[in-house]
Length: 183
Image (cartoon, rainbow, N blue to C red; front, side):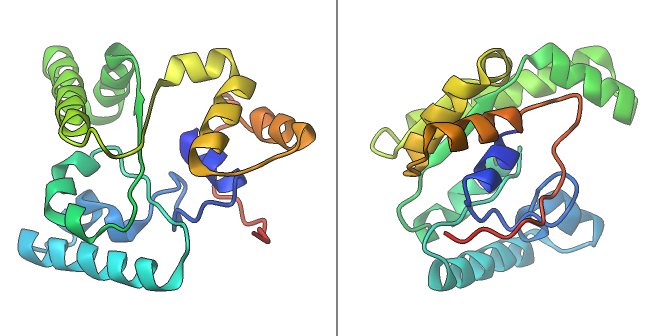
């Protein structure tokens, strides 16, 4: 949902798959390819260097980026952190259904990941941070769009804000948008 909104705000996330995730920043994808950890970090750093050179504003979506952020942090130019917290039970149910995971282990994993994210956020007090609840975003999409567009520095008209807010619909999903942006 957040990646879709950022895409609608013309933020380049490099997302080329159904989850709007850039495979260059997805270490699960790299693990499946058998790429060793040092090479994964090298690939991440090469992608960062390329994006820093070719794009004014860019980002990526990867829900478990905390697993490598410390390794790449110093290569990021003017980082801004967007951290969306979701109900751990909802995350657990998804993992239980999709991966046949143990309910208790799945819930513990979701909570552990959130705790790692909080620890990282606390370690970067001088970095701009946007922290919110996924469920809260769904309850007031327009407010969420106004807040996140201000955070990323997008100035939108009222009708543009409304259009982006209407793109928030978990029932429809959030697929790759091929519409070209001009900004």
